[in-house]
Length: 228
Ligand SMILES: Cc1cc2nc3c(=O)[nH]c(=O)nc-3n(C[C@H](O)[C@H](O)[C@H](O)COP(=O)(O)O)c2cc1C
Image 1 (spheres, rainbow, N blue to C red):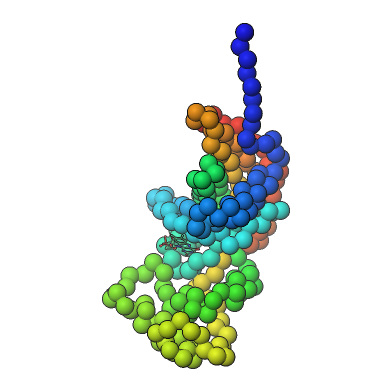
Image 2: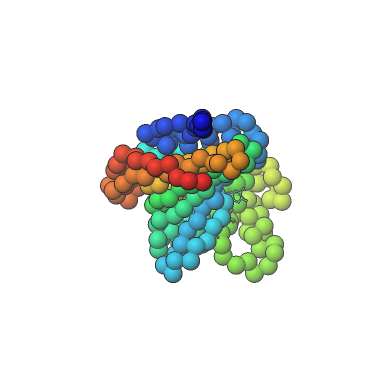
């Protein structure tokens, strides 16, 4: 007589954002790896050639289902997204045997959200964001550092080579070429490591309909369990 015991790691859920939020929260509180909010973000420009890099998820909107990250609007990823807003992302926490995969459109964050986040960053990070033309070639290895030092001096840093900020640090406006993006999830695949490579995979999908340049009307999620 055969006997089957089924113990699922991923619970039956209508909304995958519950798992996404719980897993991210747990990875942050467990602190088992640096940058538990790291996501590999893959974009594909008009020729359809993918390119991938890490970005840090700075906010997770659990009701609407998007993640926010910050970058330079002139970077390679940004120009890829201008041509093709559909992206794919992966978050992986090796110590807990968990992976999340995401697919969907990426749109710029509203200016007010980018201004708020930029203002919350350390002074030096603000200076360096202003100085960097991310993904552009450097003519010399110290160019960027020198540009950042000139800027720090212009903003009144006591020692442009040091990290100290001026006593009365003037407010640095967010440069127009730097800001947030919101990655709206149309597909989320939740993966949990199982015994003897019997991993669990659940793929969630929903429709997104563009409402304006920043947001989408969201359909309800449907899901399918997949073989590992
Ligand atoms: C741990 C880690 C975190 C990173 N976080 C960001 C980030 O939040 N935003 C960003 O623009 N680049 C970040 N980077 C750098 C990117 O991976 C990448 O080198 C850069 O954005 C340029 O990519 P692009 O030329 O494809 O646009 C991070 C890199 C690492 C290793």
